[in-house]
Image (cartoon, rainbow, N blue to C red; front, side, top):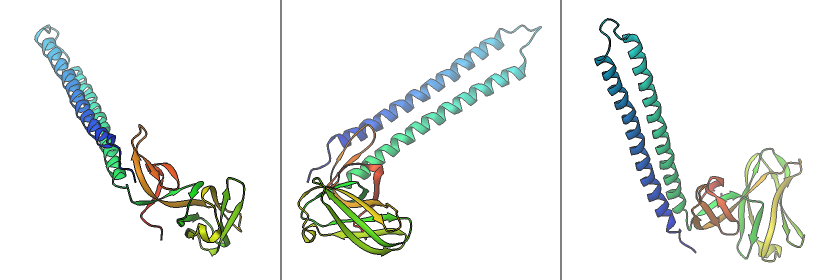
Length: 221
């Protein structure tokens, strides 16, 4: 079993540092805009023509517009920082999954000697639900689950009992009613990779799976 890449912690630290720098820069820019505005406004008032004073309504309107811009800049900064925080939390969560079991939607599986467990996401009731495995040579093996109610339908397949040779298989499900339920397969997380799109899990028997595609954590029911 592989461990999490060291770049996980590096990425989190880098994201945190980047967020702090961005926040400081945003606040500095906003403060500079406000200071410049107040300096110009003070100069304008000091040098106004006594016989034609400035319109206070216009000055207040300008100040209100500046305050609105400042508020929008602060909101944008908070949004960026929240996104960085969520990314870091997601990475920490993914790193903690190494060695744990997750269930993900899959269209192909790597069959070995271990049992193949998972569930079907069935929308309609059926009189007969079937899990179909197709080998690279085109040999089809069907596992009948019988009649099932709508919802998550667990399955537990023993490759040795079915005489399935080790290798890659396409996996799908179908019902007598013509539905093709999504197939979710359980596997152990071997390692977590860091990518620009977020953490990617290497799941035993399934392959690379983006974090957001995890359907369930822990053993299947």
